[in-house]
Length: 354
Ligand SMILES: [Zn+2]
Image (cartoon, rainbow, N blue to C red):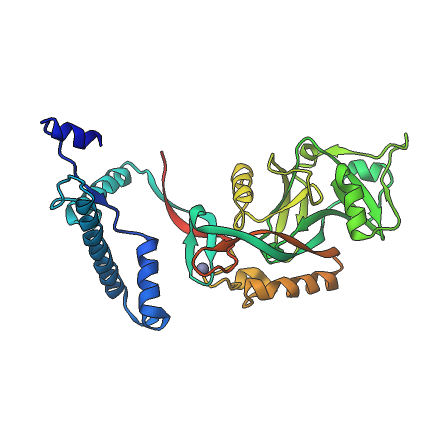
């Protein structure tokens, strides 16, 4: 309107229209139009040519529509993101950034559809209810923390964690605690389990613990440590027994659900990824593009993440580390194209540091 009204008042006010001609929506429409069989056959250059034709066709249709709506513009000279001039501009900018050393490659977790073999942006995610397993698992600490030992606790000590994605356990490299929350040791069914004091009653109810006690000092009060004070303890990873995990802490840990001890797999979660960067925790990525476990997943290599859930749960039960198992109905991200549940996994990506 501003451009048009000035043009009509006699000012020189050219309006250059523009179209973004790249991206998933066009590829998606081409894929739907030609069908999955042909899609699997054609080469990348052919696919790109079809996408180009699709973009050109709709630029024409929209251009005619705008003209009929009475939009004044330089319709014969639009910006199109596929014209070589525009692409050359991008390459120039990329070259500058590259020569400045700002371009680097890293791994970062993103939403991934194993069905469409593609990364998805937040805008391409639909949330829908899904029934998932809800399990409590104990991770064996390398040593009994001194403060509990001094209060008379003996034998092995464990961290008790809760997760709804058992398939992420092979990628576990840390357990995160809430820095300022109190953690206690629960003695139940012959195990010493460390968890947040505030959640003991809730977990006891879910797990059906009839008889349990908290390790207490001479005053009779339960011995408690802040999450921060447990930092640096080490444990045997739940699936990859050859890996030593580390206890860390972060503000993302809340006491709304779970045990206050959060299973951390930096390759499978945004919070996990960020807290791992902070504490220099390694990132494991044992899931490939098809959602299938690689050799990095140890004994579960070859299974898909869906198949793996019940298998991992059974295996944990055999190991004696499964403390409780329930089902949970919760909101879970799905792919906007195929409507299947998506997973969160780290992929190699290019970054520009600013
Ligand atoms: Zn999909």
